[in-house]
Amino acid sequence: MGRKKRLPGLTVKDGFMRHPFDIENGVQTSGLVHGRNLTTGHPHDQHSTAYYGIAPSVLRKLCARWRKTPLLAPPQDYSFIDIGAGMGRGMLIAAQMPFREVIGVEIHPELAAIAQQNIDRWAASGRSRCPMRIACQEVTTFQFPPHPCVAYMFNPFREPVLRALFDHVAEEFARRPGQLDILYANDELADTFAAYPGWAEIWRGKVPLSDEDEAADKAILEHQADGEYGWSTDEPCAIYRWIGNPPRRRAA
Image (cartoon, rainbow, N blue to C red; front, side, top):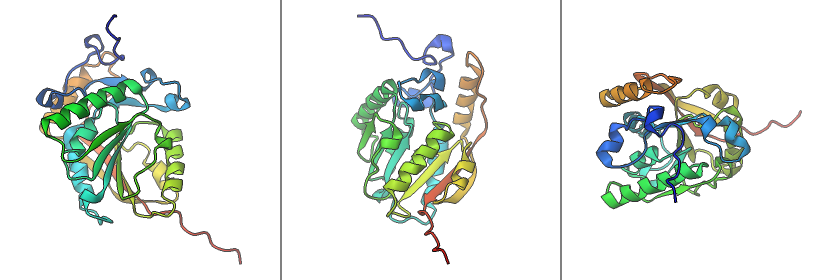
């Protein structure tokens, strides 16, 4: 049998370069795959942005910022949910922290399969401080755990899917105000959060990349075949908390 063809963006001719995170840890989370190449047959495919692993320093700093907010419970009681987990870089980073568990939600089966391989390697190396699993499914059908959750996403999809996710959250957390926080990196759709009742903005700002991540992103993104994406020294991010829909006023 012939070797399975890799997704566009994961071959040297596409400008593929490994991030130092992969080289140091023996995992596969590098590459830039455009949303147009992440088809699964689901109607939401048209709203996929791209796969690109978060700069490790950004996620670590964003999680540290979150831990400084007034939490409902200790961080170790929270499930960490990586929405649009891709190959699982965010999951691997989160699993080094004291969470109850780390769950990745990824609709693309090939990315999810790579994430599972990375999870297995991470666990075997002893780097994980909590259980990990990947759910290959569409996020608006994902059943959130029944205890406090902190979800993370690196702008994985456009507004129609984000709004559908919000509707799903409103149902899942209808009687659970304060039990879901979202760490949103590359927060292009922050206005969508502001317009949807039930979300409170806890923090918003720019998270600087470490020198190593800045150099890696610059080299990787300037090496792209089409040069569609640019690099930056920091990542615009936000933290939101689900506080629930306000009660409706009775008519006089």
